[in-house]
Image (tube, rainbow, N blue to C red; front, side, top):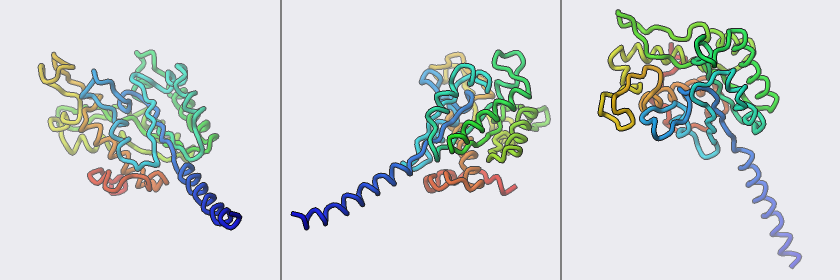
Length: 260
């Protein structure tokens, strides 16, 4: 019996250590941001936040926890107590992908916050994420579909995207320039074909929008996937550890941000 126990104990210890290692290897990727990133209710389909397809592209060691909410800015995300539960749950090795600007920059909205306040809030997210030994990643706000009469894409977020870029540089935080890359994609597709990425519907085309819809801010399934692929391409280009957990071929069709 003693001989049997001596043989069994090492095996049990090895199994326990392997299980512990597997558990330690599991991480969460938290998404915080606005409606362009958020999960959508069925009644909003085909409107799709890019955080929805983004979650499909990782192996089983990654859980994507999308906390983005429609209409939120850095100010309202903090004031409505949406950030505190995320900060409380963060564990070493997790990631926080931070994309705001759409609602921060509009003075007529209650979500508006001035440039200094926007910067302060971004730094708060970064600092509190790092305090938990997690990796914050800043993302510039994704482009709206806007073209001039000559068919040139018009920037939507120049000032607030510039703030995100400057904070990323000052705080030495990985930056995903989704504004820049989404504008480039829109320009490549052109004014008419780029409608295919957004929630554009003719009257009677979809029961959720019986009168039709011309939305140049929010994506359909295709547009959301294209934006998610841009984010995935950046994760690889930045050589984040998270890149090793992307399933093979997930962003094969995405742009390469280092190719420009």
